Length: 129
Image (tube, rainbow, N blue to C red):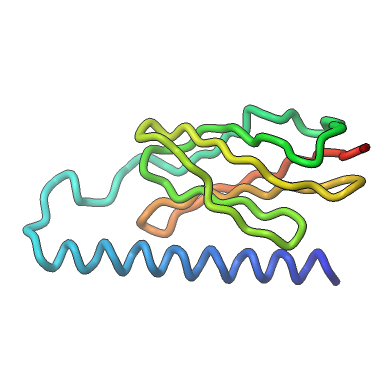
């Protein structure tokens, strides 16, 4: 039940964030002429988590999640009832620290482009203090 609530909360939050991003883009496009760079990209959304490896055991209560996605994507993570928006560079690299609870933690990362396409990945980390 708790896991389902996390997923529902996470999905709702992502939808709100996407609506805000798309709404902001829509306002900007109304004020300016549409240019080729403002048209939808043919690049599909992908997501790669490079750190930590799935199933990693750690003794610290915080772990650094590192990965890569498409440039200008909104990247978020959900773990232990928390949601974080990651930092990323223009080339799609992102990283953020997440707080863990003792035992197994499942970190779900979602990458979304401004055109409502998304990719997700889950990595498990076991926190043994």
